[in-house]
Length: 273
Length: 290
Image 1 (cartoon, each protein chain N blue to C red):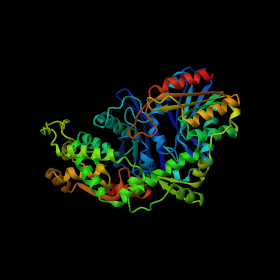
Image 2: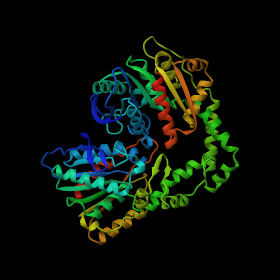
Image 3: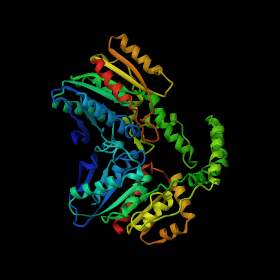
Image 4: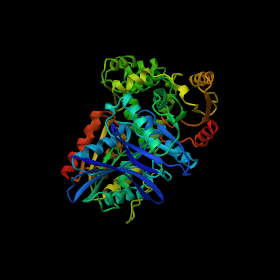
């Protein structure tokens, strides 16, 4: 594995690159990370999966978006636009390494970023998306995130008791608000709030796979994922929806892994062709 | 001050550990660097990037800093052994820090929660470590936790009518909550099995209960120590309770080489910009004094 800073227009971005185990491979994968603390919590699982993918002939690049992880900048200065640019520059870098077919591998809210990136059509080598525990509705996701602040205030009567609706209004007025240690720039979260998984632009890629990690005993994909899979199939995109039993590694209190997700992801990727 | 941030990979017992160095461009000879030890459910950037921001702040003020993932955490390979078994990781981290940072004379270990305890376990064994910054040190015992939970959580909150309105408004599972209250009460009342403190001449006995083990490790070291405690944190409550009940701890804390600071409003991970900045400033001020 190579660790380095990838130079970008918004400054150095921390990157890990695992070249494919077979040097002739032209297949590559770019990881699109989860949001805020979910990115931190899932670091281990992402590293394990990336190792396994490299062993199967896929070169894997993972970057910390501007203002996150070890990359340059403060989170409060991050915007949706900057993150899109970061990902495009990462794709260019992969093409520069000889990649001819690139898969986006997104986690949680990273799926909404990935779908926007596909829509932009900025990289011709992009041909598929594999989404882990996809967030398909930005507003639902952001509301859950804002609840962290509401819950923290409930534990401390000296803090103003707000609702998520009021917090959204503050963002819409252009105010920065701090949630769980993250200062949210409206230029980052208003596009997230408006983001919805839809079919716009998805037709430019050949296949989409969605994988959910479900508590044991639950076998059915969430209604939103099922619905999105059907929509994709209706427009004749090669689509797969899969699930695996395991813990919510992106949000659990302790670091947990879901070992079964790793071979499943590889087999889904192989099936997509 | 200009700072170079450099990713490094170094070895620890066949595993590849990933670290980031924050190197100020002009470092005096005989400089003291800070090694951030990472514990709990975090990797080298910390919750809400606390460790990245702290490292940048200290490095801009001329202090070299290194952060890294121990085995089996974050991007490092190997298997995670838990905070009680990372001596080799810390030693490898210090070796790598010396190798990459010219002019480094001494190292201060900086750790939060179980990484604070892990730092204490390690420091007295390595003469290169001259100081420690310990935030909300983890001194968990089942009995201590039960007492702290009762005292600082339940009793405070049961008497707060506002809470009850919220509890019912939220359809809080109060039956479950009461059950856990009874369970905790039972644990707090049980004496528990106390190990006899056996301190050998070499290393501090690993079988000691955590509060005594951390205490003995700190007594054994000659480090200057800064302890920072949050006011709204059960881990810090447990630490305060353990110290209050133990005159050897109190004697130790009265030693001039130990400084203690309290941030009454802060939570466990210092999860606002204000609290994070307070921790960074306290750390820098203390580093300049010692």
